[in-house]
Image (cartoon, one colour):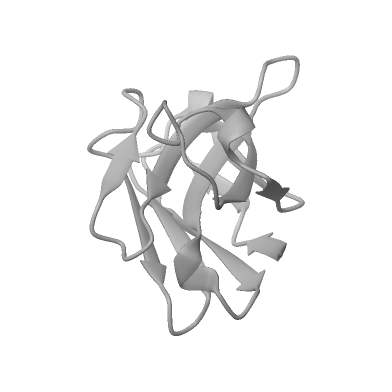
Amino acid sequence: VQLQASGGGLVQTGGFLRLSCAASTRTFENYVMGWFRQAPGKEREFVARVSWSGGSTLYADFVRGRFTISRDNAKNTVYLEMSSLKPEDTAKYYCAAASSASYSGWSKKDDYAYWGQGTKVTVSS
């Protein structure tokens, strides 16, 4: 599975961005999809994930209520809508795909076998 993330950029505090991640697979609906982020000098951290059909989502506490993850299986694409952005949201955002079971609800990096190249988000104060 190849993943291509896009939509990053520079935005002011309080602004909005929509990230997209297109997957090159004929079985996109078989994968749990997640978004992670990594700020300079920090570990990659979980942001959100969405189940195969889109019916179940999970968010990190620091984005709950501000970010929304969704997917369109007909377009092989997962989205991350980010609102009320803060300078601390500045990071490179990565999409990832998981096909195996998880004991963490797919909130750990190790749950994901496939990763995109990332898209950079910068929030100015």
